Length: 344
Image 1 (cartoon, rainbow, N blue to C red):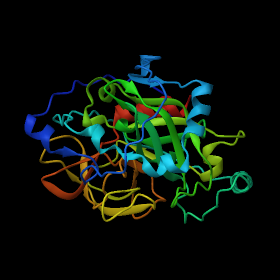
Image 2 (image 1 turned 90 degrees about the horizontal axis):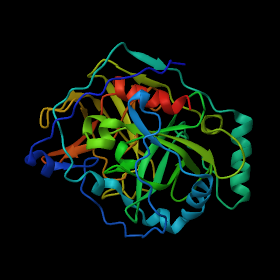
Image 3 (image 1 turned 120 degrees about the vertical axis):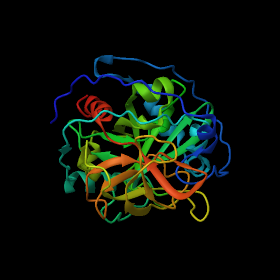
Image 4 (image 1 turned 60 degrees about the vertical axis):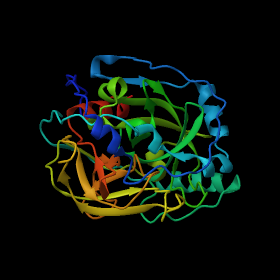
C-alpha cells in the first residue's frame, strides 16, 4: 500500500470565455432524460483533514440508508446525465505535478462473497447478470441542486476494499457535495446484480472543489452495501490503479452513455491512443471516442480491455471537436486523493 503524503496544490488559471463556451461533458450535449426532484437537503463542503491537500465529506448512516431507499428503478431511469454540471467551467492551462510512476495491484473478487451477494439480490427480486469481466464498472446516481443525475464509476483496489473512482463533477458542484450518492456495479438495463452501494465518504481534489479546475476532475467514494457487511472488491473485484504514467499510451474507456445513439442502459466502450489537449491547453489527454453524456466518471484502462490499470476517467469534450473524450492526468494530487480514500 502506498504511504499517504502531503501534496502541494498548484494554482489554477481561469480559461478564456471561448473555452468556457465550448466545454461540454463526455463528447456530447446534454440529453433530456426527465427532471426528477429530490427531497434531501444539501450539505456544504466539509473540509475534514486537509493535510493531504483535498477535501472530503461523510454522509451520516441515516443519509446512507435514505440514499439506498431513494433510488427506485423509476428514479434511476429518469436521472439526467451530468453534462449540465460542467457547462461553462474553466479549462485552465495545464500545471499538473507528477513524480515517479506507481501502480496499485488489482484485487480479485471472492467467489463465495460474490455468490452470496448475488443470491441475496436475487432473493430481493432483481436478476443477476454476467458482466463479462466488467462487474467492477457501474452506474453512479446522485442528487445535486434538487435534480437527480447519473454518471459512471469503477471499483478500484484499495486498503478498505470499498473504493470507487469517478469524476469530480459527479460528487461536488460549486463546493456543495452531492447527496443520495450510490454506486450500482454491473448495472445492465435496470438490473443491479450486486445491489446498491451508498457512499460513506466522498473525496475530491482541492482544485476541483475550490475552482472546478478540469485538470483535477477526479473523485473517489468509499461505499457500503445496502445490507450485510461484504466489501465491494470482495464482491466484484477492484481494478489496479496507475499514477504518473507515461503519456500517449493506448486506453480503453468504459461508461454508460445516454444520448443518441445510446440509451444509458448498457455498458459501452471506446479505444484509442492518447494525445495532448491542444484546444484548451490543459494537461488532460484525449482519445477518439463517441460516448456521450452519462459516461462521465467512467474508467480509462491502460491497454485493450478492462483488465488493465485504471489511469483516468471520462471528464469532458469540446463542441468544436467531435468524438473526442478528455480525461485528467493521474498525477500527484489525484494520487494523494486516492490514497486518502483507499486508506480510510
